Image (cartoon, rainbow, N blue to C red; front, side):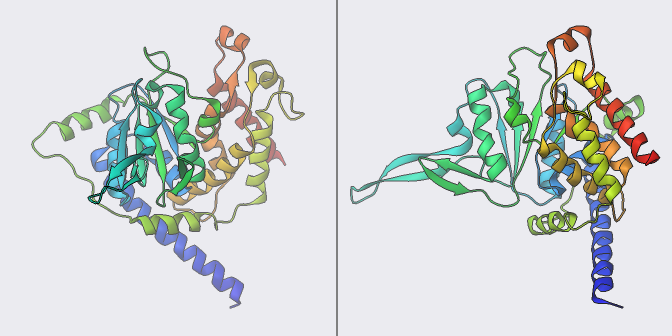
Length: 339
């Protein structure tokens, strides 16, 4: 057996072992966050990719409970910030205070804000002003913050899981496009079906409530993130990702008339990078050694929907961005199948 064969065999064994460990993590999460397997898979995918997730849904659907459970299961140091209209950037990042020593000398000391953690829950992020929302931009992208001209690195791994109420609710502010693009995926948290809601009632209103237990450590998660990037991706999958992302950009040669007529702006190269990573994560969570075109199809909406916007005329017509993405993705799938 050649050295290359040994390397591929070792990689396959590591991927299998990680898949089994992820199955244990999912089982532990679902003890407290019942049902909603798609939501759990998407959030775990974002963490495996080293990215951030935006959880969109009405109040009371368990978004905060999910993030709290993830902190326990993944072995990460968590922190929570409740975003409100009067929240200031320093309340998130930290600030310098002037302290007087016993000898009378004075010096500035930096006091870390809640962003200095490994898993930050930004609860109801769209309740805060745009100025405060943007305070997370550098932390999310560069994994560091600058206070009083001095850079401060954040502890690895660092993930932001932000919850957001629908914009139709009173007292909310739309997130800036630049910040939306820094979320790897948008996770839509829907109402549970009847059977799932029955299970929730029984499991959470009795004397004993299911508890989550730690499965990963921070170091193991970092190794998992590195392993995910070693997963092979077939040429067919790469080409479908390019077909899909480019077809969602208005006025591109690959864009269909539906996109040109309805989409104001489309996804950039960061969206293609996100699709490449999340398709690997989906395959890993499903126990497979490499992603397929079906993974691209499944990840199209959560990766692209917050990186696109409808024109004013399209909103007036009642066009649905999710339906447009689904149509373009299905066309890309058909084209790859025929190729």
